[in-house]
Image 1 (cartoon, rainbow, N blue to C red):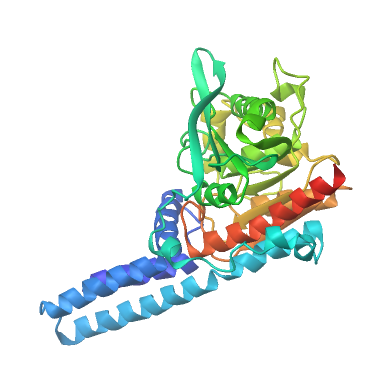
Image 2: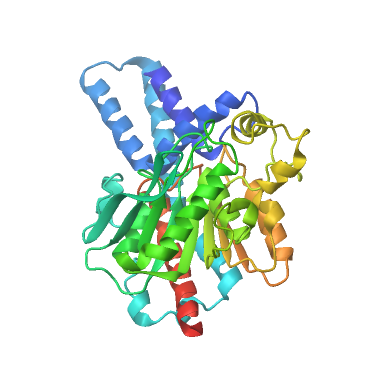
Length: 411
């Protein structure tokens, strides 16, 4: 029991103090347990409590050492309970960042009929079953081909209300996975389910992955998907003139790059004349400067991955290609509103990446940007329903609804 309770104590400690140093493999371990325990703390408390009760009931615990083990376990449960309670602060963190873009009173400007149904707090069923992604009244259209490349069909999925909404705002979701893994099927489902249930049309896209793909293949595919959306989303009730880009990790990078490189012919071979502007972006925990020009990354793991598998050249040999792949170097005065979201406890993509991009955005005339830094939040924190992820989603709904209302007023 003592070894088990010490492991539980480490799980709780890791939520507050994720590994950030070397060896990098420890960071992956810290991320894995930190994400699971940090976003499902009550589930782990209940599981550990039941194991402890079972050991006591079976007579498996006795003596001073086991009594100490129970006390250690109890202390870890208290730590996890505290960790769970602080997740509510994520809502205000996102709203504070939104106010940097839209002003202090932006919520009051949202029409009451659109504002009143945004939830104030997570519902208990969502927290009990964090993987119940099917939302009543929302239809998912799967595997729609948006482009064929070298004999391979590239596909996307569309979420919308069963009764097609007219002229609905559109969310374009780009999945993560370090540009080498991942797919459109599992990521951002809570966000897309919530928005689709509230009248949005959400599109999640597939793109070619490395090492088979070499940058800029990834962003070219995302832009082709965007062009398809502009051409066809009216068939699903969406408004092609109001599209918000989002994504996490590699998807955060690609959604930011798509937003900041609008109409860049280098990323639009064969469709250079098409309009690839979007009306805003919400990138989650992305990498925004491959060159590490501001020293925001502490180790070289990303450089090895990007150099060997994604760009397939080293920074010292072709620095211009590394800059071309970095959203930081595409910031311009025409950029639409961008709200960056990043966990301070992220062990895979340091929060300094978002701070660097945010600084450049804020220093660029005419650009509106906000940064929500979420205390203790890990990489990929919003993969499933949790107290933190839902508070972020509800706050984002206020922000996105306000952006859409601004667009409607200007039409």
